[in-house]
Image 1: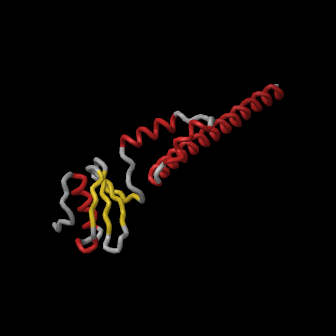
Image 2: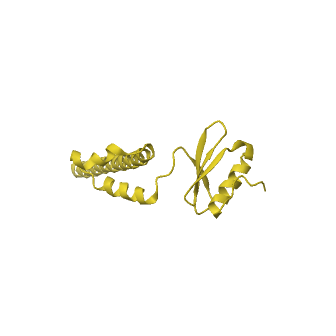
Image 3: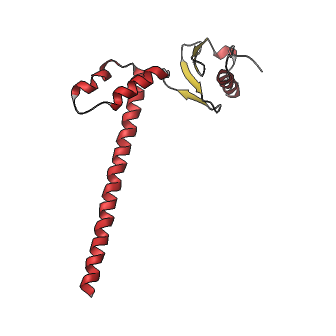
Length: 143
């Protein structure tokens, strides 16, 4: 197997296998930046780049932005969970990197989707409950 870079972990080796399977050669790579044990930034000779990560199962994914370090992600998540309708609880959002903004936006999207689903479920339950009540009233009228 051609070595595109010196892999130090199983995840890095899996990323290299993935690159080779997708037709990437040494000539396609100008620089490899290791970001932790399971993330890489691959830069091509023209300056274009991509971020690759490999999970514990060996699945490789291409990311549009570098991963936010776990410690920072935990810090941001704690701040995100503590937000209220008070403006001062959202001030931490003002100085985020583009990668952190993407992460927080994803949390916001999931939260909004979840809240919408809960509201839809409540409405469906209320409609179903009202339908049961009407059926009971109709039964009483028929008697």
